[in-house]
Image 1 (cartoon, rainbow, N blue to C red):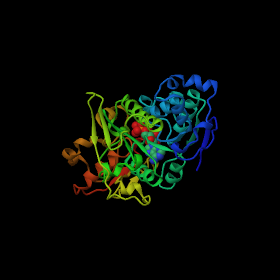
Image 2: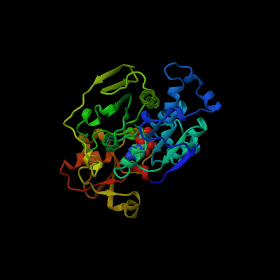
Image 3: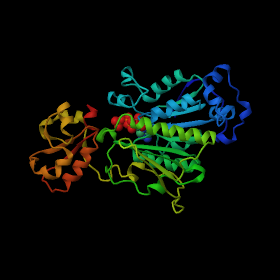
Length: 378
Ligand SMILES: Nc1ncnc2c1ncn2[C@@H]1O[C@H](COP(=O)(O)OP(=O)(O)OP(=O)(O)O)[C@@H](O)[C@H]1O
């Protein structure tokens, strides 16, 4: 596993924060100054701050949710923070991923995040993993931390993180966002309810689009990520009531929030990680032909292009071809010529897959091919 350390290299102190020998931790004059507003809180004080320093938290994803989680955990003085993300900064991330600037476009998020966070708090150890969380690395990685925070944006990662948290006996602080709504809860807290108790069945193939497909209010991950960070601090400092068995939902437009109770389902047993989380989460159950943009460029005359993005995206940039937005496809598929194979495209290759599923049910006498990773790949 490839990882780097930023900031101060700290002592390794067990895997369960409750077992840390707190008296071994001493704060420098500088740390005392940095954490002074925590230190004067009766509920945190020196003991709580020592617990924070002794704790190790892994954050999956340094995106919309990960950025505020990381900032507040760093500022609060969580001693060791792991950041796993294999993605690079894209200009469209800057609307909500507040650790990054224009200068960071194209750089690895996990690396940029760690160097920015080290400037915020030089007393923290950062472990940077520029890779994807997979069923190959999850168990080893999770076992190095006390608490896991899920800031990812996809179902395979959520089910994988859930199962790995159960197998390594770690609390998993979950957050998710969709347009104007967010959810937060804590899974597997003291063996409490898990993601599979709340959502036993993964959604149907491509049934739920992600932020790049549907959009998200920029401030929403800030709100939800901050609530996730709050849960982490509560767990470490043993404060308040942890959101275990309770799903907090928040609508940023109405500011209405609910706390929905859910129970542990003892019939659900996780004994090992699954071989293929992509398959089990239905990202692509049915095999679809795919073509890369480079392959398409070799013989464009052999294909008709079909753009299924919305009007605004089309106006902003397109690579030609017919334009039928996904939501109009059911009514307008008859407009598609069938003399050539159809290469369907969208921004990231998700809506185009949904479009192909629809079109394949229409018995048109042609072949539909997905443009791999959409026009993002150009
Ligand atoms: N399995 C995984 N391992 C590591 N990081 C992951 C994994 N799955 C998702 N992520 C990361 O989680 C972050 C989620 O961030 P966010 O929801 O803001 O979406 P994004 O991918 O950055 O942006 P967009 O969806 O608009 O393209 C991303 O940086 C992504 O790389």
